[in-house]
Length: 348
Image (tube, rainbow, N blue to C red; front, side, top):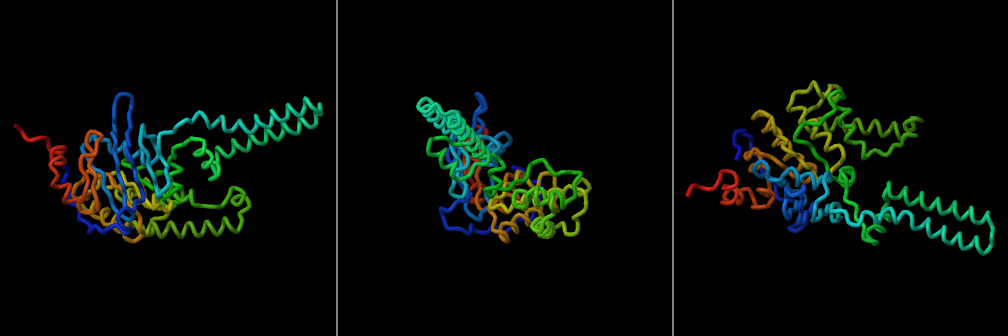
């Protein structure tokens, strides 16, 4: 296990919700790439208000599992429930959805044909065909916008469309990346405003007309950005280009951008990677502060075991795509399977 970075451990707090209450529940997740099984039948839960770490040797399947939860990949089997709603699963019978769009139009056309043969009224026929085209357009638009009634209809006929990353963000999931993915030529404030976009309500028409709603939202958004910058330790850095910030501050800025979407679950992919000991200690304290002050659950992938052991409520260990251990930091630290996975089996 990596122990080189002397992070200052944060005092872990107990989950706020009662036992058995999960913000995310992944069941039987398997992901295959051809003949390679990257993740095999992994069941994993994140309690409300907890910091949960996912660890394992290189190639253990952590990033693949992380990407399934984030909606970047569909699982080969299994499903993910977020806040009581099934969000991610292998799409089934996806070919039925286009048929669902066409059925109302076909039904109306059939009725129109029958009416025409009876009445020979071409005006009546044209009207019914126009209604059929409108029904087809309405269903097609519903397939794009996906209102609740449309999703319920899909489930009723046995169609499931797995959530995409934007769906997960709208549901309340924020994330950072192992390699920093800021917009380097945008300011710190602009980067965070991008992360806030999914929660803004002004329309392009509001922006074009400079409506009162748009102006009020712009002022409140910038105030919120300054609050987030202060939270992550970047007060007064609003107008600095992201590329000009030190590496550790860029990490903090990416975290602030993830918080801008008001998540209830934060996915952090190696947030202390590349940091020096002081920066690592500060980031560890910041993650604990975010959980405690904002009541946000956290899923952490991290190789620095001092960070993992110091901040986590629970730890899950993967090896060769399979879950080999799960429990409190002390339980995982002493688990023989974990020791073998990191250090190898003792010589005979």
